[in-house]
Image 1 (tube, rainbow, N blue to C red):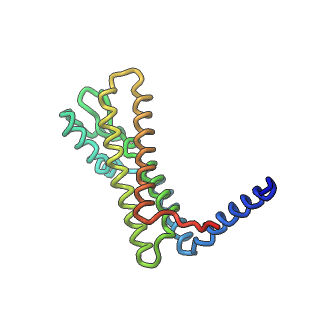
Image 2 (tube, one colour; image 1 turned 180 degrees about the vertical axis):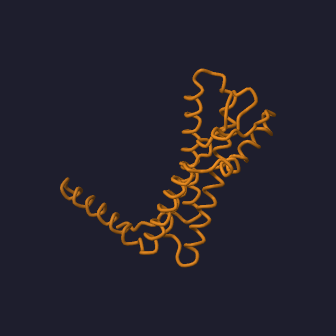
Image 3 (cartoon, rainbow, N blue to C red; image 1 turned 60 degrees about the vertical axis):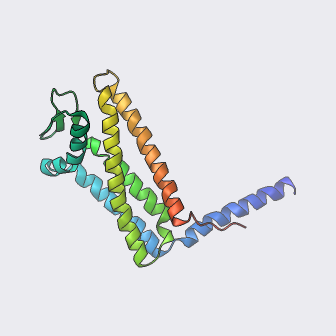
Length: 191
């Protein structure tokens, strides 16, 4: 096969692959993706304007895990979050991992929603939302727990960010592969 024939074949396969993906998306898939995006934007904007009472309830599981593992009393301070005795660290609104929860939710919905139809599409949507929140809270708790021993170091912010990036990326990749295995994989037609 000549070089030009190989390029033509490669372009045709690439073109078929792209059109197959778009052809497999139905109106319901696009609408659910749009709904997921709308919910995500609403949650982000709403979370930024969250009242202290609601924020204390959202961060309560994180504070309980830290108290149980480190035996450090935490008290809620409005505008800050749960603050450790001695003010070495605080569990604030940024610790919730809301951006990660939204990324996970959108990733799973946009990639795998076309695997289901009818009633099961809605079940998948709701399950993905609830699962994203639970996985996000667990991951952010692990991030907080792993970061606390480094609070007295000068490079705490860098360490905390590095732990967060590593954990969130590992969780995103793991959830993608787990969902891919559960759903039977991404469907693509090959020539």
